[in-house]
Length: 343
View 1 (spheres, one colour):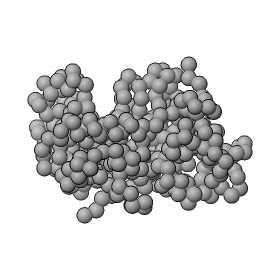
View 2 (view 1 turned 30 degrees about the horizontal axis):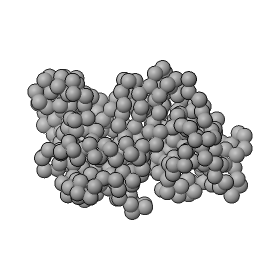
View 3 (view 1 turned 90 degrees about the vertical axis):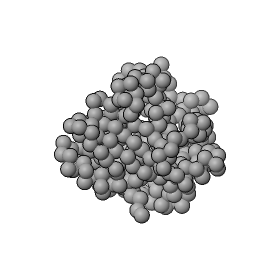
């Protein structure tokens, strides 16, 4: 049975700091196990509305987010998805649709979606949302409607520190060559292209691809192949810091279990649902990918969810993932502040 340890040094422990975010002393600030992310913000008075407090403290929140990368709002009596959507709108304005999809999700309310609907026994590696594209949300929020009975945490990692942990040789190679993502849709190989592009119209898919700089090729009635060249390293538009910002380690065929990989390749004729290459089409060495995965692992911070928790992340500064779990679990997601690579 999971317990919530609010003091001491065990998992999920909070180290108290005698500092506050607001002049009115309405909240308390602390950290989990002396990690610098996430910053934990809790109400200092009963009945404090997270959305109302947010509207009056947006600049302070953005400053803390730029420094720490992620903020965990805990104990604010946030109980509905609609309340979470109001909070995210206060943070980011009009929220974004989940377009050009990579994983299965379900729309819950307005522009709030379920977190990735992969089987409970699977691990989702650390990654930055939509870093396999040239446009992505800057603000990403998670709301814990129901924590799992066991497991189901959402690990996070500082993308600046991941960048620093990766050797300069690998960083330079990726920076020069960039990353090419190749996806094959159809015959249950991956999400159907109709789900990914949210349309049944081929002409709309083609126009989206042209606008996004995605190469595409139709293969018969059911299959589609796309290829897109994207960044490997990005510079945060506000802090000027460099971050590791791609999903080569997740898209690459080596991320699949060996049996699953062999099965998919047999069914797809040596074209897996997704794969990653250097921008020139050359293979990415598995030893390089293992170093990247090790960097994420070394920077991973994990904490148990509590019902009503809201985790706000700067999507460029903090990567996120998911641990396996047992029992019901419901985490919903909202995205905002679209950033687009130009030039």
